[in-house]
Length: 141
Image 1 (cartoon, one colour):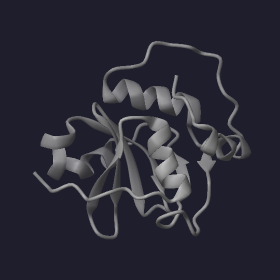
Image 2: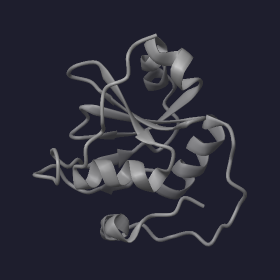
Image 3: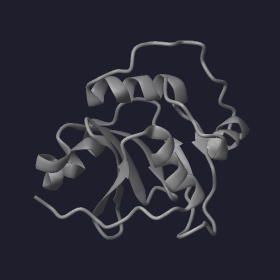
């Protein structure tokens, strides 16, 4: 359901991920997407922090369950992001990863900035695990 590119698949397998054989319809709401992602990756700790391609690469630690408290952090961008659900932390818990209707986001805790990671799960994970640029921070509403 959430394809992983060959450039990052090995990170997930090394962390103990075994692909499920469940082929369900792609969920539509952020909550459904988050639940589907967590059913596949809950508790998985993928990658490591270190030198990356364009910036530091990150570890990604998926939550074991939905985290409503973390989802409230993005209220300052709600008009742009719509409903979001927190699915993981990254970079030694200095980043929170979200899924929303329009894609994936990274909130950097030390500087309170939000970045759009792209519409696809694999692209978002490539940016984090390989240290690819997140682009320009989103302006607050």
